[in-house]
Image 1 (tube, rainbow, N blue to C red):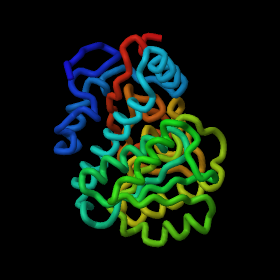
Image 2 (image 1 turned 90 degrees about the vertical axis):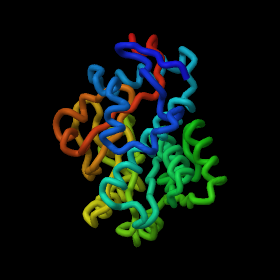
Image 3 (image 1 turned 30 degrees about the horizontal axis):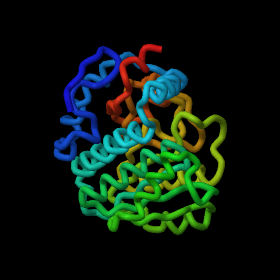
Image 4 (image 1 turned 45 degrees about the vertical axis):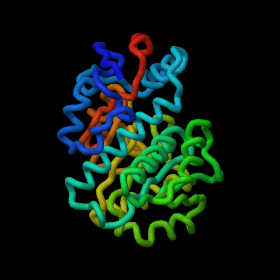
Length: 268
């Protein structure tokens, strides 16, 4: 693709899903690759939601934004697994909610499988299907990936079964909830957050998608329980909630990945 440059909008150079070298980069290389996005002024959850809406209005399909976001997460997860010596320890467990945060996780699962990893993709929801069209499409695409095991966990008993061998996972990806959560977490998301906590206590690294579940991207306030991440991959711009309050401590290291938001959508 032809590189473009903008102080606040589209990234310079290839976007994650179009970058043939992305899965060869370590964490430092990814940080350099995405340095333009990381250098933009930070915003909160409401501002990012507005940017998403305007991106769609300017013709950027949500499915394409999701493809870039999930690919970025997959590349970061691979790099973290390599940096921590976890490659080959077991499958990568991707814990996904039913919304678009989960959809990013489904894309990450597919990209990791295509890169040669065994992946367990868990839909954590009382419903048997994701609740957004883009997330549903990417959940369905996983059925064609031989290295992906799809599981649906709707109740505590199913989460307990999934968590029996969680200490043998190479890495856990937290794609449970993003910007749309408020108040106390409810089941089955609450149990999934606790499962991720047990995995991390057992030494399994955790990568969070956009924000650790459930840290507010504006204030940094956190629910209880909350995910403690080793690495958070957020999108388009830095987020104020990952720099302030408890959010800064819970996010771990932070990468800011470009996802192809048109410059016009970023101007408000």
